[in-house]
Image 1 (cartoon, rainbow, N blue to C red):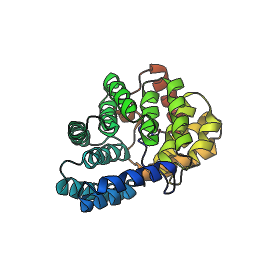
Image 2: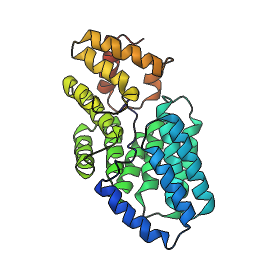
Image 3: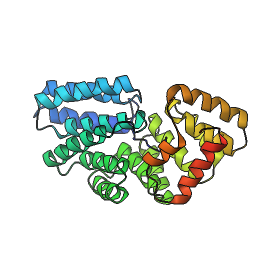
Image 4: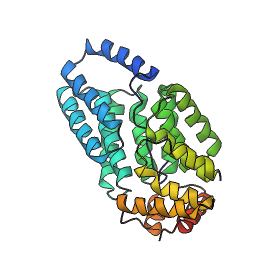
Length: 278
């Protein structure tokens, strides 16, 4: 995914996953605080958009939900997610966000060790602090407990991409797209990052162009266009990305973004340089 950092955020309304979840929520509402659940659901809608103000708005809802119903594991894992996503959107500017994410994810696992969401967020936090081995361990647990959770599989795909396991990453993202055929932008961002690292520049551009909000992926679009030889498109994408993240530097990116295979790092740097990034 973008930068490559990404995380899959919810699906479209009407998808099967949402209908299943709605049925589960209806069952859970009978045993849990309905107000806490309505705050959780409201936050979940805001998390569908990869937009920082809405992610922060969602966090407030999750916090209210957790206060009203302290035993609600999904409120804690959702709080964790909000911090991970903010870290991604701010291009890794504030590591305290990952500490907070880990704290809430650990609480989620303690509250419900059979729910994959807590492990998923532990895996994302581990990935972005650079602990690639732990990120894989946590996602193995997440997949064990939530094997048909499309968003988890999409996040797993991105984590496997960072771990330079492209084959397993493609299997997971294709499974996620099968489960959620009207996916959030995150799925396309992850698939586009994978296309790029496998040298499919045109496919990467086509995939990333399916994002409703392309802002987070403008850099990856610039790199893909440059590698495909379309220097004018690369320049346009780069100029747009500079508005979105004016402080971006290649050196800063290399320090922050974990990639297991040095060849993947080199391919990223080559694309950034060809696209005119400094």
